[in-house]
Length: 142
Image (cartoon, rainbow, N blue to C red; front, side, top):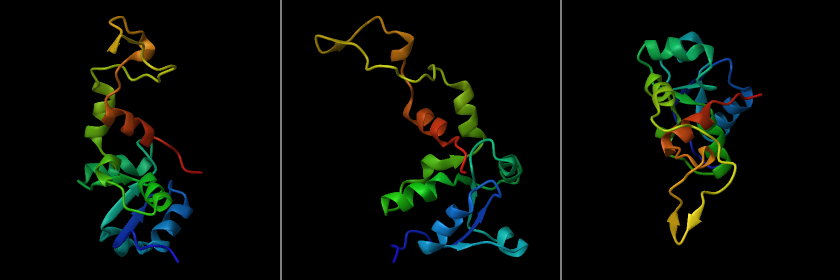
């Protein structure tokens, strides 16, 4: 028996793995299967920014979420803050317009006498939390 995490009718892009829809149902939600159900869904999920459905849904004013939210909630056995999983043009623009470089850290920042070193390498660059989260959302489900 799974805990009830979800409720409502959810529409999943064909790019989202079927297992994600099954997890939605296992945890209390209903998956939209007919055109009428899809048009009246409470939640719309895509696999990431590259999902072919995303632009169409966003252009219609639909709030779209990354299906990874369902996976993460299921794994955590609790509902996680969904705002970090919104897929829209604002999130995509934030990635493109970030004032700070988006880089992976190869090592921890250098700390000298309790202070961060004044000469930071590119590997020590600041990555805003929201941008880091959005970058991680751009994943493909197999």
